Image (cartoon, rainbow, N blue to C red; front, side):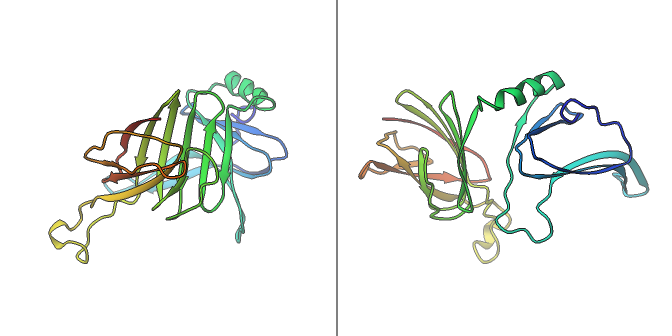
Length: 231
């Protein structure tokens, strides 16, 4: 589905300049709300690939959609919202509501970090791309290395989830005895506000300084480390 119209043409190659918001629904009922000002590419074609045993070729009809930045993009960006269990009626209603009542606020979108907050509910997600990146607003003020952070605030309580996407796999130059294993890493977060939590196996907190709290989080295997902080 594309903004209320069923996409039945096959094969199909289509480029859409989004002067207005547009929404899509996949066969898996995933809804995509696309912000205006982007270039959408749509393709429906037959795809050939080896079978699972590699002994023969198989074919199938596939639909692909992507946001195109051209061949030599500079300072290109993208924005979309993903909705689960989408229906045409639900996506149409959501698109109408976005004109006046967006459920999210994009706090930062640059080379340092992407930070998005829910307008209601107190949740906030940050993807920090660089070590010692400047995070301009939100709960997280800085991080010592690239990481993914999710915060859920309720009153004076902050539920925090942290992951290091770098598996930090051991090679012969690190520890020959652990070759191929994910070695632990420490993500040091600087949080805005005065927070406290008991130290644990994967957490160490420092005393707040000038309205900021430093939290050291031990990460490994790309898994999420969770903590509950209180003011």
